[in-house]
Length: 67
Image (cartoon, rainbow, N blue to C red; front, top):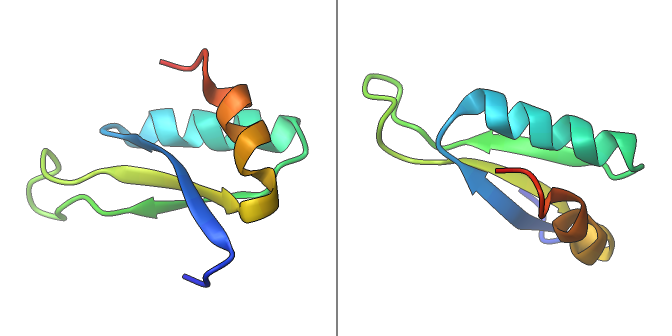
């Protein structure tokens, strides 16, 4: 991933990361999901949500209420 993307949140469930991505998109923020979970044992690793550096603070604010 290029250097202009920063991780704003990590989840243990794919659907939570997808919800976060949709919340960000609804607020005009481009986001990508990077799934670092083990393919065989999906209990290891995280699903990370990344945004561009300029959107980092706004993205964190948008995701504060997402559990």
